[in-house]
Length: 219
Image (tube, rainbow, N blue to C red; front, top):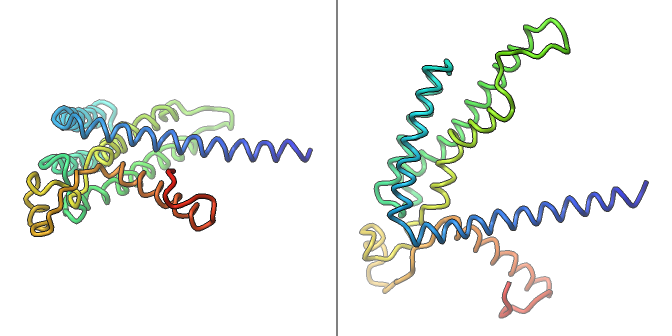
């Protein structure tokens, strides 16, 4: 077969492109919602952080999850909660914001190693290749834990927070001091929107340089 593999490759590329566009559109729309409903978003995010802390405590007490990893997860969400003090505005050089970025990676690596080691240990004790250990979480359970307890709050913060450089001077004293004298009146823009707009502008510039479109044409 020669043609079918090519069709499969083209379908994979198209599927990846459509998935990327769908994610970007979703991020843009969520960022718009947060900008319009800041107070509600702050309340929901704060309660979500407390809810996940309770889940981690219950997992540690009832399901015997490792104490130190649970403590790491709870401490990480306390740091995430610190980003809510000036929600939705954040300075990209804020120590709490930088610590949050590091803790996302640390939590992901730590819990991935924990579940991998637990699964390897469980399968090492089985007597037959066809035997399935009873004491290991399923893929759905592990994926759900990562999605809710590790990634959900950082992802929500990424969608919700606005970079401090784009904040109205009257709404953020730090930005006001930096912007004093230049008459800047730019509206605060979420980081997700900044990322999507940056990627769109970069693709547009590539199109202009390649001669596919004029500079004054839309995306």
